[in-house]
Length: 141
Image (cartoon, rainbow, N blue to C red):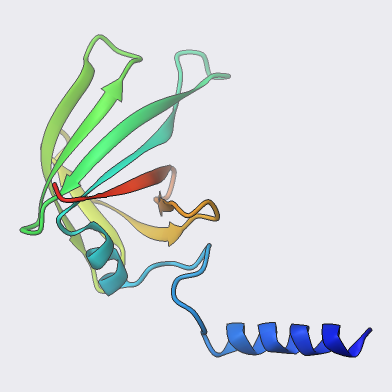
């Protein structure tokens, strides 16, 4: 192995070991990072949903307004139903472990997940059975 290659590998290893840089792709965001990312902003993205046929997955568009006071509004494109676009209100908070927790008025059930930076520069909210892709963070609600 050439000397330059050894030096480069050592530098990369040291950078990773010492936690250099901010959030890298694949790293879970902490409580402050999630709060700073979402509070007072709007997220546009999607999730995949099982279609009527078990072999078909459908892309469902979402837009969520994360109000600084903990309120939230989610607009979902339900093209798979007669509802079309619909909006529901809810609440959000980030727990001590850095998990984003949301409760929507329709279900009235708290659901939490971790957020990580995706390799394409967006973000992903990962829950037990589902991943939400946050393609765009828009300043303001």
